Length: 268
Image (tube, rainbow, N blue to C red; front, side, top):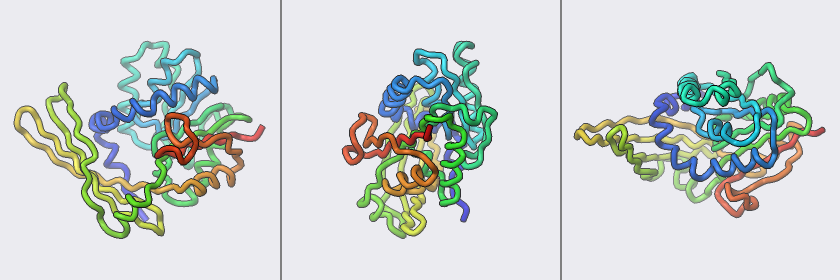
């Protein structure tokens, strides 16, 4: 069945604005993770507009960073941001447009760290897609390399409210954009399909401009819901050893937070 994803990522400036607060939560985690593992060759899947990758580049070290994303709009925004970086940093980045379930990169077999951050794994809707992504990533890692997947821990109450029907409408955020002269309100409603394990999300974006103008638009976004054992089995069934599982960006164990961050390691 067709899934909704593309339109949500087409307005890259709004996307960056919506998720700037997320950076305060997860960027310190990714910086610490890369510092701990000291990789030489990093690949970020679903790299988007560079929210995480650009921060990683400012760490000590001279690792190469490659990014892969299916959205040409997102990669275009990433490239524009790279143009504002010092040349020495920008030259360390290679960007690829492609599907994370079927990518084939020239540096296959040499990555010692692959990242799939912030719920991007939820765009793998079918079992075949999921297995192919993990198998392809395994093949791209060097022996002993790590694959780190970060997604939300399912909230049963939240999902049951949306079971087979649109849920309540939630006000997700209120964002000020002084530079562009508007305030944006974000609302969501959700319908959860328990057989496919997919949340069908409708986002309502409302902009109130200082000039008195008003803009309102809707976007659709579908997300697969991964339960902990399901995600762990994807690692194990594709050859990974599970090295660690964290429950949040504070490094606490699984179950002590709202996230599931799994570190899988390719066998030596």
